[in-house]
Image (cartoon, rainbow, N blue to C red):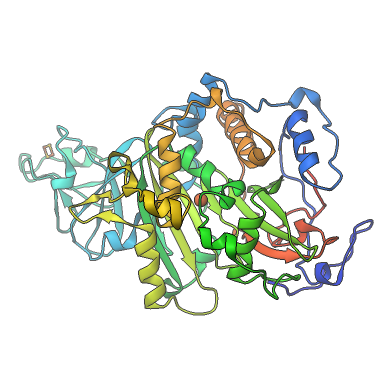
Length: 495
Ligand code: FES
Ligand SMILES: [Fe+2]
């Protein structure tokens, strides 16, 4: 992490620590539009750095959403503006482990409001087809997967590309099957995940190329869990730094003592918990990038340094959550329909395999399903997440565990699609405001040919990462974790 000396940029301050950070590359984000002046003022208060003036007042965007804009960015079914935006990207649709063997059992999926069936063919390829058979609509989920997925009604069989490869119920000699295709979407597999592209074929971007896509599968662990609310609520939780001082805190965190890692560098787990409990607020700023934006949450430390949590949000649904080094967690929140989403969690080790214990604990924490009905989470709204009120008084603020369940409880408790016209946002919500602005802009501008973030092949996706680190008082926070071409100017916004 702390590897290359960074050349001094004229006018910028560098301490010995800042000099050890990676080289910054100054590159403006294409077509980025900045937050409105009122948010800029709030963030200006939040971050002790110069904030550039808004250059074009006509480009101001609202902070509170209208009902129409809320609908615009929450609805993702076929033909909707946001659905068309999301279909321009690769998304996780299943785990490789869901389809363990060739010719094995197909799985039923729902992605972006579409009912789908995935199967692994005889060659190991994953096919992703519309669930309805193109003959008369029987479900292909009940199909026989042998040399292709065969509908059990009249025997039409489809390969992974949706071609009809057999039609035994047609008259011998007929070539009708050559005219038939099932709805099918391309897939690739990496990082233990099946990735799908559901957009226009002529606009298909290269497959995902994050760091974990490049590592061997034994260095990566992926898990998934359904979340019973609109996808945007779940994403907004991932980029919300200020809830860490409340929702995820245990009472023991408030009794911790600081340790010797209150100094520039990576803090211990104890020191991180101590700081998050003691300083329950975060000074928040947001920085646009070619791939979306970075969110920085800054807290003071007792020794006079600053504790940084930098989360990178790769538009539209990927958040690399702040953590030490390059192996922290990445989330993809993929809409199933407008009131449910699938949360994919990917964790990797850069320099060694994931141990069996790490793999087991990742599954245990992130995939807590009901043993009596493995399609549902064990802790869910209809059983109040099995909240333990005694634990809430004595052990952990939420009374619900583990951490992911705490997140599910609060985001789902907002309702299937939260009414964003009634919110009261403050400076800590800067990243949430920015994400909504980017989404509204993408949904409204798609037909005008705007450049969507995170589609350029020039972006070094494998270098995008998060960071959690302590820096000296006068170090530039934006130099931390700036490996993927992010600008490193303090507090800069690119509009
Ligand atoms: S409905 Fe599938 S083959 Fe007839
Ligand atoms: Fe959380």
